[in-house]
Image (cartoon, rainbow, N blue to C red; front, side):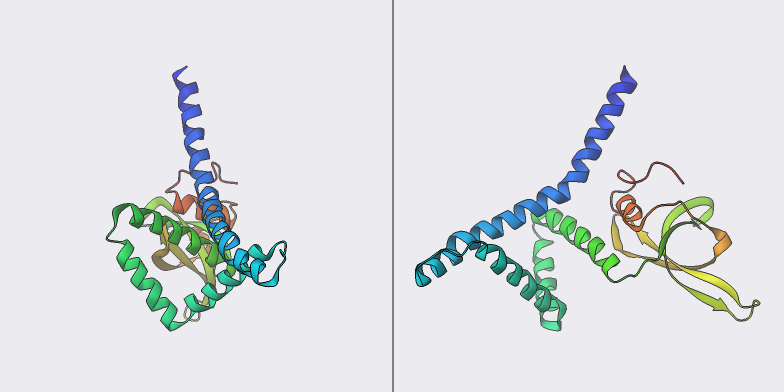
Length: 198
């Protein structure tokens, strides 16, 4: 009976952790949409004399697009760094901001096509495996043109920090995980992610 309740508890916690990013995203988008739909589109409707269905969504997408452009240039990066420094001083805001930042970093990495595949690699000591992501390969000219793998080993729970190791392919193991599964395992500290090596 104790094992049954432990099983239930484990998967309830996993379910909660899995849905947190979706719930956060939903509330952020809903808050922005309602703010825009009630204020901005209301003003536009009054000016032109009629309502345009879907105008709030279009304006929201344009705002996201503009934020993306601003956040990608030098001034925008400075601005967001300032916001991050301010949020670090407010306990509850700091936690929420860091979670959001880690999630956004995770979604951006596949977009850059930085990772080719997930591997397990010996790290720190023999027999201790850690999750790594293959970012490319190099040729060892002094060792019969042997192909070596460049493996990025992230530091949980933040995938944007870590270390790069150069290893032989024979020193890695393919767990059969997708990039997304590997990322979930890293960010959650192993709480969410694959339960078997395929």
